[in-house]
Image 1 (cartoon, helix red, strand yellow):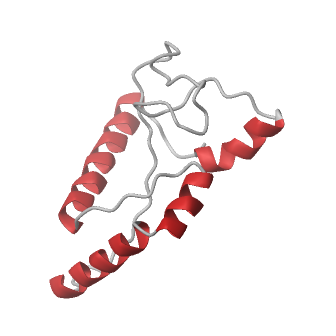
Image 2 (cartoon, helix red, strand yellow; image 1 turned 90 degrees about the vertical axis):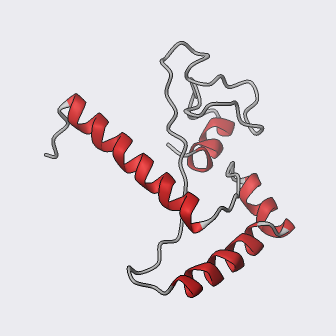
Length: 120
């Protein structure tokens, strides 16, 4: 589950975290090993959030939104709000974000196919 969802339960003692599914430890839980460190496999399930414009949105509008969103994410108040919940705000370019979406879609599709996962 995402760190911002798990964190209050870990802190209250109602949930015991065994590992974090990213490539590095998180500052809010510095003693919690990564799944690789915990010998649970080389797993990276970092989560991300993004804003996707409607298909066909003009490039100049996409770029305007991208600049505005990146500016918001770089603000101290937004950084503080994100970090306090265990999230790391970061912006990118529309092209880099499209590559991330594509890479993750391919990764999860491959895992679903390889594992024979079916919806019930």
